Image (tube, rainbow over all chains, first blue to last red):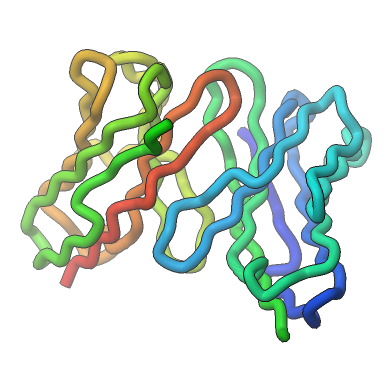
Length: 112
Length: 111
């Protein structure tokens, strides 16, 4: 089955700097890669996703890149703000009814 | 559009007791998931429903966990009897296609 590795497990950046979180996946059939943000005491919230026919997607300060050959994808947050502090999860999904498989999460701290 | 509703939000029980969690997904979302999230880890799928049929329950500890989704709408997850290691957040999610939306979760502490 699919296995998703996520790095780093913790990340601290100064406000205004960029943050990058990287994930690798094992199943070459995976074709959908969402990123979730989870704040303390809340459920994961979908912030951006990318499909396998696209190499990059951007939404304001966040962007995701996908390298299918290397089987890795990354989340980029620019001009970080204190409210970006949260745990971020990457995930991968194969076609059909297979479940979404999550990475172990990255705790991002943005220091004002 | 209303989000995924879950209740109770918090529950503390003693080991060997039972507990039930309820979920009402976003209207029209045929697929419903229950995930278990242990502190410091990513969510792990317990069971997936498509309408009222089970698609995947391979990770559900069936000796103590059960779930149902009558009429293809809301769902209940039950744990009986609970163990200390069941302490976690139980997340319900729903979706159409690939996109999955999570509820706020039900936080279970087993003492």
